[in-house]
Image 1 (cartoon, rainbow, N blue to C red):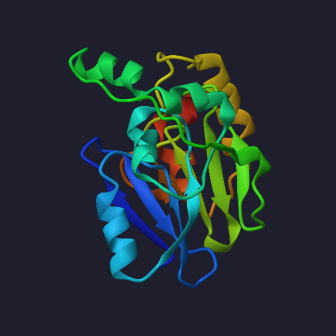
Image 2 (cartoon, one colour):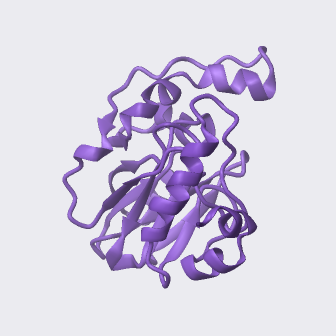
Length: 206
C-alpha cells in the first residue's frame, strides 16, 4: 500500500490508513461511521492493525470505536465525547437515534510510546482536539482543527473561539510549510498553501 490511504464515510469524515514502518503494520487516524470498508481493505491486503489515533471525540470521528478491537488513543479531555455519541447525534439527527455508550478502553495519546509520532494539543473545536504529525511521512493530521479552506466550528460542547485562535497562532505555526495537511473533512493540501489561502488562517494569524 501507499504510506497514506484515505477513506471517507457517509458523514463526510475522513479516516486515514497509514504505514509508518513501511511494512504490513498500519494505523488508523480517526474512527468514523462505517469503518467496515477500512477493515475489509486491511484484511484483503493481509495488513496488521497497530492501533488508532483519534483527533477528537465527536461522533463522526470516534463512533467507529464500537467496531474497533485494537488499541485506541485519544486525548482524555475528550473522553466524555468519545464515550457518549448519542448526546451529539441527537443534536444533529433528532432524539429518535440512540447509540450505546462506549465502554471499552481508551488510552491517553499523550502517553503514547511511538517514536514516529508527534502530538500537538490544539483546543478550540473541542477541549481535547489534537493533531498528529508523522515526520517521516511529511504529514500532519488535524481532524477538525484546520481544513483546507476553513477551520473547525467552536460553538459545540467544549468548543472555544479564543482557544481556537490561540491554537492557530501557537500550534498551526509549528507545522512545517512543506508538510501535507490531512484534515478530518475534505481535501488535503500543503501547510504553506493553507497558510497563504485559507481565509480564516489569514484573518486569525497575528
